[in-house]
Image (tube, rainbow, N blue to C red; front, side):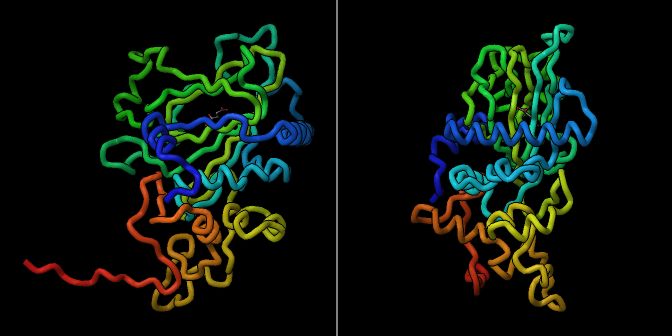
Length: 318
Ligand SMILES: O=C(O)CCC(=O)C(=O)O
């Protein structure tokens, strides 16, 4: 069974491609994270010599501040991410996004981030029918109030992750503007989404700075993209689950497993030391009774544990 995600949420994710959870963060948490973003932005502007009116998208942004990093493994949202992606995951990248109010000379129709499907070209060929796979999954955290009229928001086209390559190439000719959904949510809300949806960002026509954090989760057998390896000191002071999500293994002595000569197994793929993937035990402790249901919300036919052996070993005879 799933840990937290309901059947209705799974259906939404497998139909529209996103679910919205309003007010996940309490007001004081929003304030704390908002202040942390301000601190990070001031630091980055100074270090990169950037003027105050320039928008920022700070890659690997989670690690710039512990209060932002806490978004990586909040048990409520992490449970849902595991329900969708399974436990063999880590963080691919994170972006702290800050969109400034438009200046008087800016074009109010110009999107600060244009329409796109994430990694359309990079993922090409990974499915037989051309629809985009869910090998990367995003949690968008809305830290400023996105329900304020005119505030910069994420726009998505529900279901567009299922489009064929031809539809992806021609959508501008036939899109119905009514099919576009604007994520107008209060501060502290989250969107769990397939980033292969067609999406973009509206201009900021308010006087308030837009703040959002996008956190990507991907299987451990896919390399991260906003970093190669995280700072060893950060890993050393992190909990086991956070260490996994930061891309580290519990037992770095045996990255190819315990029997390198006869049975080399990248521990990012097939672990023989469950301490390398503490998220598995974490998830199993929390899951409702019954067969585990994680992995795009459709479940798996069986689970492996220490001493796992294949049991179906008979050749069927006519
Ligand atoms: O800022 C947003 O709401 C969306 C960011 C985005 O386009 C992305 O993460 O690919």
